Image (cartoon, rainbow, N blue to C red; front, side, top):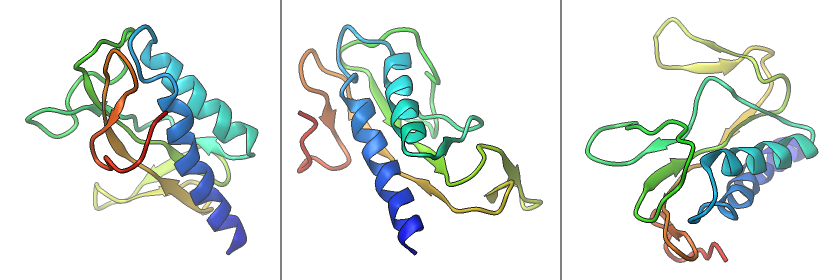
Amino acid sequence: SDEALRLIRVTQQSFFEGMKYAREGYRLSDISAAVQAYVEANGFSVVREYVGHGVGRQMHEAPEVPNYGKPGMTIAVEPMVNAGTAAIRQMPDGWTVRTADGKNAAHYENTVLITAGVPELLTDPEKSLV
C-alpha cells in the first residue's frame, strides 16, 4: 500500500538522518535523537525495546547506548519504526515480534564505522553518508 511504502521510506531515511551524527565529537544519543525526530515528524513511532549494537565477533555486542563516539568504533544502527503505537508484543516462539496494534512495521539496518571524518557505511559502501 502507499502507507506501507511511506513507512519503509521514512524508516530508511531515518537511518541516514542519524548518520549525520555518526562521527567523532557526537554522542550515540545524537544519532538516536535524529532518528526519533525524523520518524515522529513523519507521524510514525520508534520501537523502544530493541536497539542498535556494537559489531565484533559476537551477535549484538555492546555497546548498546554508550555516551560517546570515537574513531574506530563499529556499530549497527537499525531504526525499527511502527505505523501506529510504539508498543510491541513477542510471540510464543520467542523470536517473532509484532506490533501490539497489528499495524505495519519496518526495519532498516547498516553497519557503520565511526571515523574522524565522514562515517563509513560498511554494509553498503556504494552509498555516501556525506
